[in-house]
Length: 360
Image (spheres, rainbow, N blue to C red):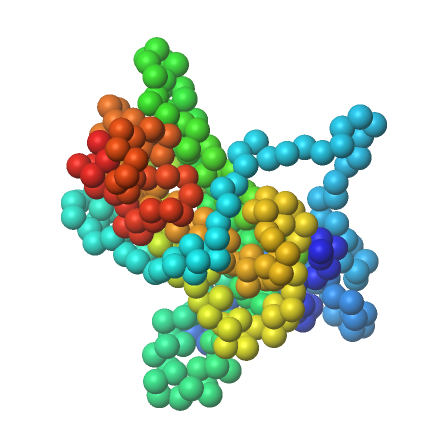
């Protein structure tokens, strides 16, 4: 287990570099600026920090430490997760594919545009320029690798920031539906639990990555600001059009599947050597029930990608239903179990969601 080990290491930024990175986030730098990198996530190294350099941490300790250590009590031995995770098989996780649901309504188009705008901001903030890398690679592969190649540190920055906001939509939707159910004094038809469980799952992704990297003050500030804007925007959007928000999250999860698929591909191609022999932290092994021999960083990304693919399916499916009338198909018992139907696991995965006539 490497709950106290480092997943990636990066150079410590100087004052001058920090200023450049901050300008990059504001869009004031040229196209060659790589974006906010090591200012987002502080990763401790085993090697001493070179003199004359300092990072965004107030801590002088250069050894990795438990970011949120377990707290022993006199009587409690262990606290299990509120929502046990379903068991995924290697075959199921390897069957996950990149997919996109075509827009059919104006609501779908609004949701897709919103995701593209959000994706642009996230790419800018985390220095992720895959499209430019692909375009340049056709002309000059060496230059593309040198200028745009992603490494372990860049991916970890992206993952931490992505998961820090990914747990918000499910919580907002579940909260609104909970209050709506009490106010109308009617049942919610099983939607609340699935939405809260999705939010819980995304938080577990974040906690897992935080066992491998510790965010610096600037990263914390960015998460605080993003979460404040993100929560309130989703709150009002869900009040106006729950269907649009579910479609939005479905499209957002499509992007998450793409991101983790590229990370897995980069590990397989040998472009992320620090992750090749890295083991998943204990919190991940316990949560996903990872078997012996399948606890590497690559295996961890397979589990997380599978989760994101399930969120993609769930939200596209919920976006196809009547929001106030239909039962939650993921908590329903079906009359004919011989036919494929929505489940909590990966048994009958539908990348673009189930249509209403198929399940209701």
